Length: 337
Image (cartoon, rainbow, N blue to C red; front, top):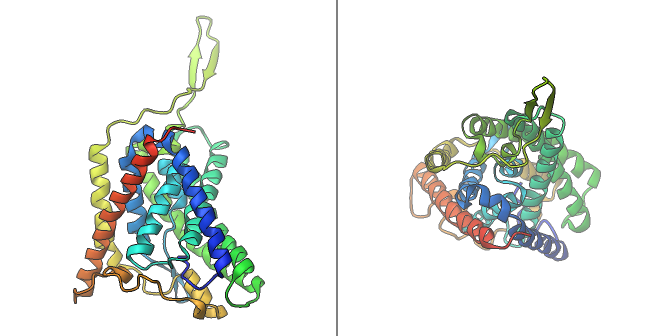
């Protein structure tokens, strides 16, 4: 769902750019408390993992594909404000180095994938955790539903933006139906990936999952007369040193980017498919960095497509980790709001 240049007029692109800049600035102020609990390394790894998994398009039928957006997953892992920074990092790396998404559309992509999916996914997750049993395992079904809902909502927001400043005049009802319909299917894939990743992490290191650290079970107190009362702990589960776990995470991320991504579906994603069907795909313009040595997730000068793709993925992971870590470090040093 990376929006290219040309889909929206200049005022709309400028407006989403301002929204994105404001969201990133606000998140830099708010992420301090989240990052202090586990350190900036987890944020950098989360950014790299989302980057890697987004390289793996999965088929959703009828000649189209989808890929993880990752907002709900990131919010559950590192908290909503850090997740906005994580998603923005991923989108910046993709747009500037890999020509994935237009440069004038970076604000639009951050707004849709780095803000809408994070906030929708997180608030759905939080709402469900209020009614589910108070235990760390409840994070998985809650975030799974959040992930499922976040994708079609982002697609609907794209439709709303298109109604304001779309480049080609098309029936908005058809656009909304097609975008939401296809992205419900993409959302199912998003939910499956989110459930699998969170299930594995919660089962082994729940202290590294932001949403789980605040779900300590109530303490049952029994007095001398046998009367019972419950007390809810007011402090999150303390995060333990995560060096080995982070190392495993980096290894898995590199494997996904450098190996699994080579088996990604070649079909167009949901936005490209809808654009071709409804006739606005022709408005897309090539990225200004289309000549980048890493454009289209390949390393220029390497003739073997598999080696080129694997190397590009590995480079992307390393760059994303470094940038994500740096941004998280800056956020952790800022005074909490």
